[in-house]
Image (cartoon, rainbow, N blue to C red):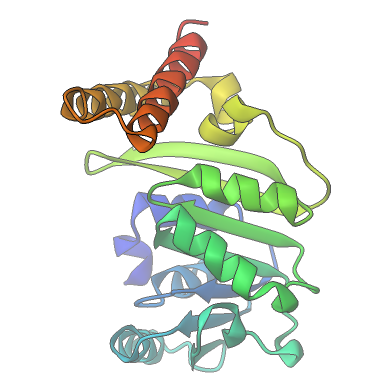
Length: 232
């Protein structure tokens, strides 16, 4: 059963989907998320979009196996172009990719966002890129969640239309997450500080080019910023 093997990170994404929403799950892979949303009765209809043939075939097989072919449409398309106007989609979910890739999917498919009221994303890394995209494209972060699964840490961001403005700390750490400062949040950024120190050590003896100086300054600034948040 899909409901039994859905990962905790995808369950977290599902928790932010509104009751009765029409969902387009982009990069749906095996279509686990839309199948779960249908099986639990949270939604009645969904689109599962995939850009590659392998995952598209897997999604088709799972939807058929779960008996949901009448409720989930699986489409082979690039990003948001899996959505058709007649679908009446109001919610987009994108999970399991890097933040830069998610932001590029949203940017490249901006013409598809007119009817969308909520975007829920689960980036594996680089959440800050998505927050920057939101600011410059008329979206605001309305909730954030951070969780740990199989020793990996994930963030889930929910966005709705509206003007937003975030400072450097909020862009990097998350406007909600940096206020909550959960145990998992602290673990994530303590790990990052260790990694940043490793980066500094690796370029310590490098030739002092403008690029190296810029990198050192950026990393040291990030360490200072995060330490300040963790200390409060």
